[in-house]
Image (cartoon, rainbow, N blue to C red):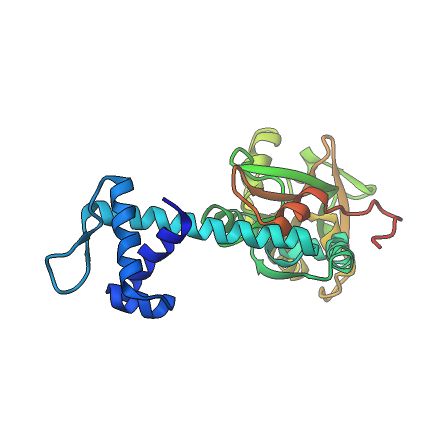
Length: 296
């Protein structure tokens, strides 16, 4: 059994007849039929029901067809990746990105990576961390830039850059004389706006009684917009606060401390998932520069 026989077999199924497959393959019908008989002999099964006018697969034929299609697709992918290695990195990476990564130097780093490998392109899917993890699980994207916390057991993770979480809101929400840092126990007394996956984390960290959240949502930017309306205090990554100008009044930002609350941007892929040469290289070598370093 060889790849050519599998190609012949799947062509017959696709065309619905041996004569149609022969035309599409640009070969005569007798050698095509001979190759299929040889394939059946090697497998020890009958692949086609030849008693009817139209070609029909036997049960064994249906099973073998699914396997043959998978093998041919993997072979095609392997040939493409080998050519990429020979020619330099070429291809498209399907990358998921959360909305807040743009302020962490990620876009600059991606641009720098692209300059080193000009044959590479990106298809970007945006969403929150959980939406992107779902897309990874279902094979819609190859890798994703997400933010902790998230369930890490099913993913290979590279942790890129850590930053503090801030409490952001009107100045009069915070205790008088409060410095640049806000202890966690004082945070619990404020009308809090958080995004959903922080709810369980904060629930474990807050002393009793547990705070009542003013708003629980799915994105840091939504939290910040609510804070900008003046109704409460958002718990968000420091980077997303920089340059925020949408509030009709000055907003105050405090670093959450005692204990500190941080979030890390991570590059993740599904465990045991095969990546193209482009995807593998990006996952293994992508770096975000430290503050003050050049991304070039």
